[in-house]
Each structure stands twice: as structure tokens, then as C-alpha cells.
Amino acid sequence: MEFNLSRSVSSVLVRDSSNQSVESPEYPPELARLPPGRHGLPREFVAHNQRERLIAGLAEAVAESGYAGTTIAHITRHAAVSRRTFYEHFSSKDECFVAAYDTVMAELRTRVGEAFDHEDEWPQAVRAGIAAMLEFLTAEPHLARLSMVEALVAGPVVVERYDSAIQSLVPYFQAGREGRSKEILAGLSPTTEEALVGGMVSLISRRIFADRTDELESLLPDLVEFTLTPYLGSAAAAKVARG
Amino acid sequence: MLSGQSPRPVLDCLVNRLSVFWYLNGIRSSPRTSPRSDSGTVPFVGSNSTRRPLPGRQQLPREFIAQHQRLRIVTALAEETAQQGYRAVTVADIVRRAGIARNTFYENFSCKEECFLATQEFAMSAALERVVTAAGSLDDWPFRIRAGLGAFLDYVVEEPALARTCMVEALSAGTAAVRYYEESQQAFVSLFRLGRDVSPHGADLPETLEEAIIGGVFWILYQRLTISRPETIRELLPELVEFALTPYLGPEAAGEVATADAAGGVGAAPAG
Image (cartoon, rainbow over all chains, first blue to last red; front, side, top):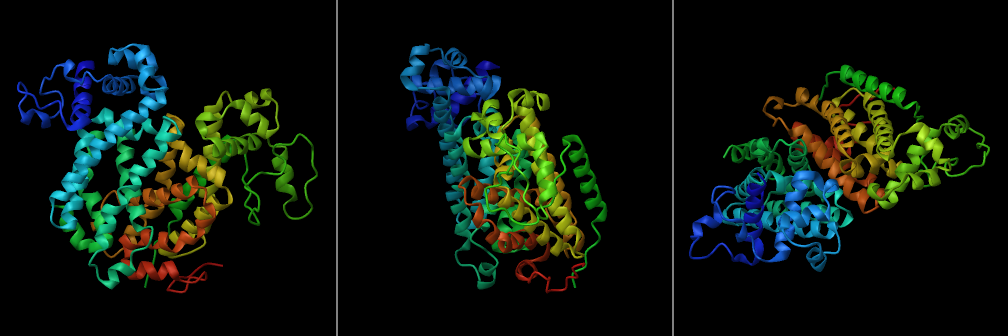
């Protein structure tokens, strides 16, 4: 099980780091997008980059013992590097966690952004973006927990990043104001997008806290309807929600 | 035009829950008669002297508070938490601010976590009491929501440290705190769900709607609390009311409730 998690973590991290590494003659390009655990990439495929190994090691350790229960010894053991090496890259557990958090969020942002940009119409783009987010969190439950549950106990730097990450979703919804009628715009307020994003994240976060990531994808219709209704009206929003 | 079913069973249930909290905590929360000008520090907390209470209406509550150690301790935890975040707070910090002996802390709580839970319960039951009282004084559901939301915002503004405990710090304070946070959200969900009976399309509303509305309101308040601008919170009431009611009533009706005057101009029949 430890090795599978390493693969799933490393598959995310390896994809993210410098956009290389999974493109090599023995591993055809299609393997780069395989879901974790099925492609059988050997552990040494996690970049010989020590920093990445430490980040992956932290993710594994936190998955095992929670943030509070994780020690630097755990991290270095999972990463198969020395304690001294740890301190060459990070000055503390918190700092290592920040790096791990940033890595996971970068991947999530990429997937959401790509899914959103792929659609021509804004309502469908929102649906695609939310679907991509839910898909990622479902496929990577340990990383979901790391970024949404453990992040809250990992120190003020991470909490601030967490808050910014949520706020960074606001522009996706603000884009929905473009071209709306006066009536629709009159029904929106300066805090509408913040409230929509906060509501959406609270539904997602609650299920991750309760270890019910298997329920996340079933939230899609409700989340789409909830977030699109202020811009489209409930009937049109419900239609997009059902896909 | 807008008629609401009586939410009495739900409100009664909430009041019963509050009574249990009060019993368990041994703390009676007395409604404030005037807004605080300080940051919520009870005058006796933090001082070993037996200062005389000020004469006037607030005399009894303050004297009661002075003798009530648990309240002093939870207030101190809330203030320390607001200042440095829960993770950094120590029992030493708490006893110093509360002006009590370390032994006294341990007579009341076995550890910081237990104290946090008591603080959270105290704060949330105080907030809920206000919400239920305000909502219970009106007949129409939309105006109950407006009154309840207003009361909640008032609480957050008047007791920012305690509000932070429940709304900002709770999710990082351990499993029991998270569980309690979830239960509190459920209490609000019950109040909102009544809107389905007054909504023309109540049957079609998404199952998770109440959760999402409350999550959204909490998120906005959380943002204001974390950047320490609680004074801006009251201004948000009309837009929060509109946000909360629009899914049930549509934007026009929601807007009317949001901007109605305090006497409840549009079709409402406030009691008393």
C-alpha cells in the first residue's frame, strides 16, 4: 500500500515538476495520464530530485500519521534520504508541507484551468472545471486530505495559502457577469462570487473531512446548479447541471 | 403574500439544545443590553483584584461573571486564540490572561483541547440563542431568516474572538471540534430548510442547497474575521439576506426582504 501511495503521489508530482520525466522511450506518452497505481512505474521514476522525493515522502507520511503525527524522521524514511538532506532543502516540517501543498495545488489548478478553457460557453466551462476538481480529489483522496484537512493544522503560512486558493476560484465565476441583463446584474452583489465559492468548497471539504471522497462526484449537479443560478436563473442552471 | 409555517418545533429543539449546552458548561449567557466598546474583554477577567461592578442594569451579570471561572477561562482562550492562533496557545497563556492559578485551570479542564471545546460550545450556543430569539419573534420565514442572520452578524461583531473560535479555529482544533462545528452547521441548516415549504419550487431545490448557503455565509464572515475587519460585517446583511433567500424566493422577492425597513415593510407581521 505504501508503494501504491508513492506511485499516486509521485505520478502527480512527477507530472508537475518541469513538465518532463514521464516522457522517455520506455514509457510512451499515454502513460503520463494514466490513473495512479495502474501504470506500474517503478519507484526510481520519482525524480532523483531530492526535493521532490522529500515532498512525496511528506505526503506519504501525512497520509499515514496525519500532520501532527508526522516527524522529519518519517519524512526522510519515506523519501529515502538523510536527515541532513532534509535540512538542505527545508528548515522545518512546516516548510516541507508548504512545498507539498503548493505542488498539489499547482496540479489541481492546471487541471481545472484546462478543463475550463476547453469549453466555449461559460456555463459549460464552469461545469467542466468543477468536474475536473471533483475528479482529481476523488482520484487522489490522500492528497485531497492533505490539501483540505491537514493544511488547516500545518501552520499559518499554509492556512493563508489555503484561503488564497479558494479565493482564486472567484474570477471563474465573476466571468459569468459578462453580457448579463440588468435584472440579473441587479441581483448580484460584491460578495456573490465569494459566497458561491465558499459554499461550494464547504460541501467538498465536509466530505473530505469525513473521508467520503467517494461521494464527491455525486455533488456535481448540485454544485453546478448552485453556482450558475445567480447568473442564469434556476431553470437554465438546472439544465446545465444535468449535463 | 408570503406566509410561513411556524418553525416552533425547530426553534424549540434548538432552545433545548442550548439548555443542554448551558447545563453542561455551567455557564449562563446573559443577553447584552448594549454593544461593547472594547474587544469583548469582560472587565474582571485578567485581574486578580475584586473590582466592584459598575452600578446599573449590568451589575448582576458582571458580578456573576466575576465569580464564574469557567467563563473567564473560555474568554481567555478565545482572546489568546484570536491573537496567536490556536496551535500556538498554551495553558500558561490562558491562565495568565484569565488571571487565575494554573491549578484552577486544571480543576476545570484536563487540557487545552477540552477548554477549546467548551469555548466553542459556549460561543456557538450564545450565537444560536440570539439567532433563535430574533427569528422566533417574527412570523414569516423570510423575515425570520433576515432577523436570524442579523442576530448572527451582531454576535460576530460584538464577540469577534469567540466568533473566531467557532468559525475560524474550530476546523484546526481536532476531531471533536470539527464534529461540533458540523453539528452547529446542522442547526442552521434546519432553520433554512423550512424555506422549502414557502418556496414556489421548493421540491426542485438541490438537496445540498442549505449546506451551500450556510457555507457561503460562513466563508464570507470567516474572511472578514481573519483580516480583522469585523466592523465591516454589519454592512453585509442586505446582500447576505439576498444571497440566502434568492434560491427559495427568486431575486425580486429576496431583494424586497433584504431592503425592507426594520419594521418589516413587505407583507411581514413582526410580533410585539
